[in-house]
Length: 381
Length: 217
Image 1 (spheres, each protein chain N blue to C red):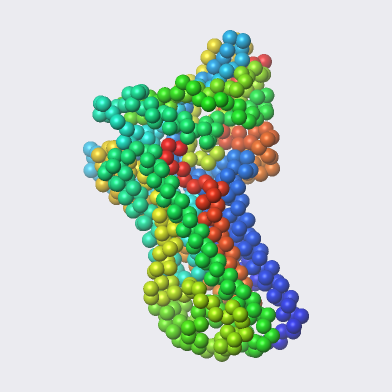
Image 2: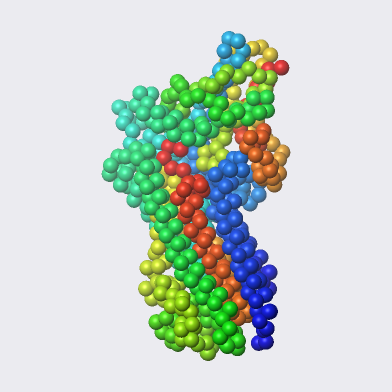
């Protein structure tokens, strides 16, 4: 590769610019939504009867309203249970296709992290089912055991909500910390004059594949190859030799040893602990609709039908979220393919995307926490 | 290729961001009948709302409430709930917006009076009654009152039958009703308008609103 110093500097600027643009687009769109929601543009209301979103909104409203009739019918007609489950399932699918921060956080998380699509799907299902579970637990404890009023339940949800949003902020901060360091690292790799240019071709793939977790095993790439092989997905991509000398890098860089937790841990054994933070952050806050349906079912003396409906809704939700999550994983692997073709600059780009996604997660948490982004209302209104 | 990637990522970002919009599908349905109250001098003193909630929300709202007779609630039993309702409605400006001669009024209303909840045991639904007095009674050629939830958590809709009544109006005054789905604006135009006009200007959000227009020529 014969890249002159001038060309290199130009490329760095371009990649940095591109990364900046991506981060900007991500945050800007998040912010735009937030403003739109906050009514800063004058009470913008989603178009209720046109477009795809309008169609989704109309459909899920229809399904949601059908639930009450079906629960009533189930009291006397056993076959209504089938209808109830069917509608709950479709409602779940549509509900998740509509607005909601869960998808945004999960897909940003997946964009920021090296994940297989299978893990993305698992993450989606786990968070959606946790969401169903919290709704059931809240109604079971509050309404059945304590006999709490709607207001008390609303207040409970609000507390859970704050915890959940704080967790999203923490998740974002941690991602930003890890990804920011990797970004700086990649930036240094690109800038470093001491680095042999020929090795640059591997740097991209190397960075992408290992995210600099080489501090504990400087040349032990085989270890990581195994981790990926377990997922059976990306493994073969990294099976080529790495001539890149991380030892030298570590010696040169003040930030050479990134001791933060690495995304790869999630893909390997024990990674669930890290994935758990995303699952809990997203899944802790129950869906207002589920709580209302559960309380209604309880009042009709069909609590268990409500519980079943809630979990079926959760499965429907999970399917939609999983589809979006798969898209995010796909986008990421596209970014990685690009990164590999562009040597060090590509890696920098990939890191930029990750930083952008981390910023989005954090921004969502902050906006939700500060109430700039209105979430589902609970309580009396 | 770098451009293609940026487009791909930007596309995904938009998707995610669109998905990240706050809840925009209703969980509560309100069927409303409205009354506009006139003073003897012909000015409008306030708006009297009667909002009937859907059965699921009604059931949720009455959860844990004490009742002497199972299956029904008296007005007295619902009094604390009515209080909670109107108090939390304040935060949302009672979802009620007024325009006088086409000009949007800020803080047009005083706190609600004469509020109470009613339970219909047959339909198992709650109806919230409350009156919003105008800070200064309105005497104008044109008054628009709009009811909507900008966040669309609550789907407001007029009752099929007699949604609006003018209570002892001057003879020349007439009222008409416009439902959100009546208008001919496309979604794109709405969005455009919403972004381009500030709230201080006329008509913000009104394209989506349930609107009562009273004209006294």
